[in-house]
Image (cartoon, rainbow, N blue to C red; front, side):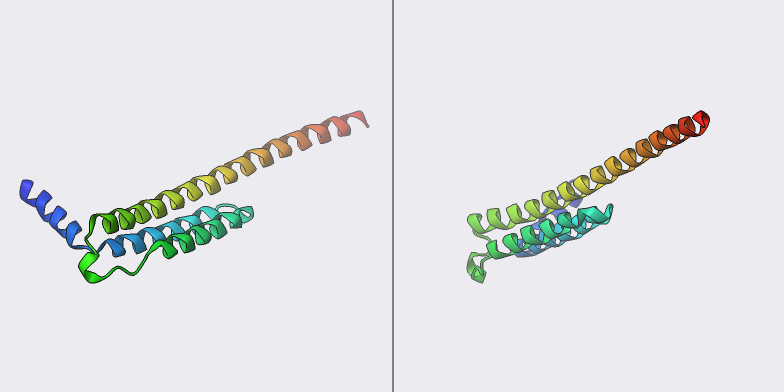
Length: 124
């Protein structure tokens, strides 16, 4: 089991921090669009995801190959990775919660309208 753990850690260390940054940005955009797909009114979530992805992309500076594993470079790249994932899931939760609110309000409105209509029909 220890050997498998060390092989994973070696594999993760061999992946470029820039790759993690780009993956984080891509996941952020993808999940933001998924959150926006929940309700038609949530296209703002997808736009927000794209704007944040552009901002994160500007943070990716071209680092010489000799400095790619410098501590500051690693910190920035992994922070961008985490930011993209957090932003994407936050947008997904937002889109899903707006969908649930719209569904609840719609069902309450239908019940209220049905009750009013029944009362009006009974009075005539």
